[in-house]
Length: 552
Image (cartoon, rainbow, N blue to C red):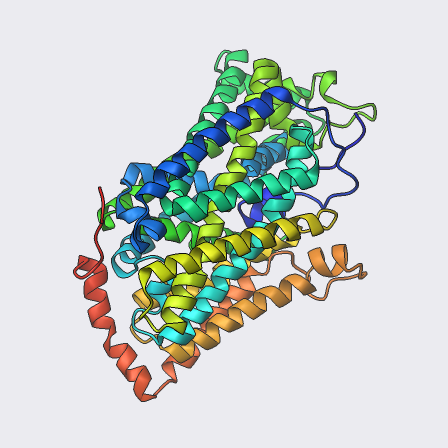
């Protein structure tokens, strides 16, 4: 097999993974058709299409379509959130980082995990009590509907669009090397299935696709980790000692410090990972699928447990790959490089511990995870268009629920077609910056307005608008002027903005300007908005007046 450079970061469900690898540096060679993987994936598709048919018969109202009728339990929603958050490339990318750098690879998984306590203690309960379908419901609760919903919808759509392009490109690259299918064929499959799930099944189908995917991914990763540990008699010290003995970096793999070069980058990366997670529209939307605030808290509790367990597994898998993959010449090409690149370490390890059949299973699971992630993203994007822009801005809250659902389904089809077309057009482009930009936007435009609208009584529409747009613009401009776009893509010798991670600067800009233009807002509307905070606070704490579940 010739040398292949695969950019798994295109699938990454977070900034850290996106910036942890280099760009595609050459052609991705289509591999021999992997029939076990194709058959297992077809079984998954058949099962999820049956679920979509079942969900379509139960999707009768806007509440059913957007929020599964509020009838998802905390445990089920925790699994679904984990399924939405744990992408295939989280599994492949972080384990690949550990394979490459050892202990240092955990810097990203810790960053992703630490954002969840913030959601648990500060956001989940109030979000559920104040909102109905999207986080814009909360941001605009006591502020002017038209401008705040427009800003929130634009922020949500920006995150969704950037993610979808990266996911579609990554899907094609992944399927070429795992399944042996053509790139365009893989992109079209993902897009069509995504449209079917969301258009007909809404949140009910999307939730169960995510739950099934989470169970499959956790089961497969658990099996790999158990087989690795059984190889060393469940002795972690033995695993680490063997890894040190065979790794080219030796004892350096047990120490941190190689992936983030300076304090500013480290802090900025942390800001993006923590606040970006709390501003992702497809994650926030999941808290409206449960019956009440108690179940919302339970959702985060279970999701944190599943995600934390998952990242522990990637650590074991990464060191297992050092021991079992790096010492096996069958997994290397004629140039002495790991086939498919370092991010394929977990895939090769699955073959080493489970043979071709288990390799097919893990490959199918990797593709299934893409479908779960893009389904959640598409539903969040369609909801921003139909609920925030159409029903609340254009119709000023007077839209018929059937018309609103119809608009959402049309938006889903449009988003699906656009994602397929852009996925094919961007096949040979470096889209690494898109995922990083998506996290920066979520942290800079979505999170500040959301958190301040719930906790700060002096917030006004003027402050939220100016600060929110400033955070959005700053994140975009700094990414363009930074090393990833300005140097790697545009080919300039030196970046105007020296740091890869802009979140520290864009988030501070957003918070400072929101504060400044709110405290200096002495308008009559600003005073009314401040006066409404007490009513909002009571509802956020008690849930009195919050919407309930329509099915259980």
